[in-house]
Image 1 (cartoon, rainbow, N blue to C red):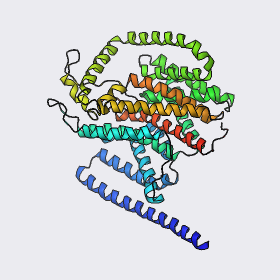
Image 2 (tube, rainbow, N blue to C red; image 1 turned 60 degrees about the vertical axis):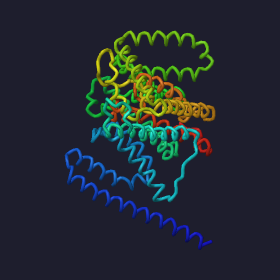
Image 3 (cartoon, rainbow, N blue to C red; image 1 turned 120 degrees about the vertical axis):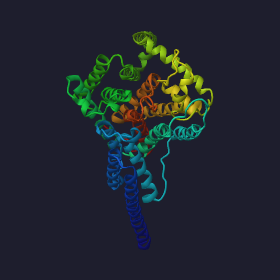
Image 4 (cartoon, rainbow, N blue to C red; image 1 turned 135 degrees about the horizontal axis):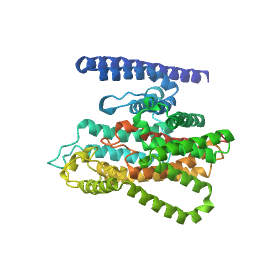
Length: 465
């Protein structure tokens, strides 16, 4: 028995030593490579990126011990760190790549094996990842002889948005294995976001601290309302003053988004839809009675929205028709990332031969990844919605149940936001990598659904406030 224990201890120590040797080798190699790059292509922007990489390398051992902090770094870094490097790479992009790398390094170097949790939500993610890789390859084909291809950095940027977004859900699901960490992530997001919204309300110069790519993204406003309202509305374990405070956050957010920015529909329409869905989930018996009223109200709202900006909606419809026509060249896997933007001048819009984007997540998906990509997108959110619905019936009252109800409503809001623009998987030439600061929130919180699923499967979920 003692011999077996000694052998196991020796094996563990050897893994740790080998892991440290690999990390040390990686640090030295990175420094040497970075020195060569700076010698030939040195610039102030490259120097900042180099310093950021050094900081990341220094933080790797710490993240290996507390990998959950990587998720917090994605949110806080995307909110507050102003860095924007080559091709629009920002702290949110950097932090997702870093967290993914640390997660893989931990399995490869420390654990010496790849261990993945099982979840029904992962299959559509993997399918969409495969479709994205194939579509990237398709993007190297010159589909239109008389048009330019998208520059390689634009193609890589669009491809990276898909890979990092989908990968972030996998990383979150694997790293956040304790409900306390999920709570921490949610409350940090609500707290920091509420400070910004309150600052906007009273006229404080909060805009100089919060990044425009975050606060100009639909998902920033949507998830603040969804998460705050869900906890206030469903989590009876919270004390009344806390619930009232959350209701106040929702009211202020909707006021700032609707009254101060009424013309920007993506700021408040998805959030309003989410609130309506959560009320329906709470009062299920009234849903059937409310459906006719809701349909009439929705119809009037759509008419008012279109009437308030008729020219914009008219040009959008024209753009959708043209992008759909372009996509017919390769309807299965699309034209690759960012390419269709460069093909649009071949198809005049209202008499003008100009480049333009679709302003629709659905059309972007068809143009870049084909109908297979669009189907995989719908399948992914259907599976997450079904999973959340099943979990909602198994969870006790508390944070987790409120979170799951919020995710059901959030998925409905996501579909509305996707119709209004490329807020979920940003298009390089529209919302872009800067908007990744906001869009990545969706993929983080989806990972939280899998976290709760695993806790339920393992019997580790209990009454939580």
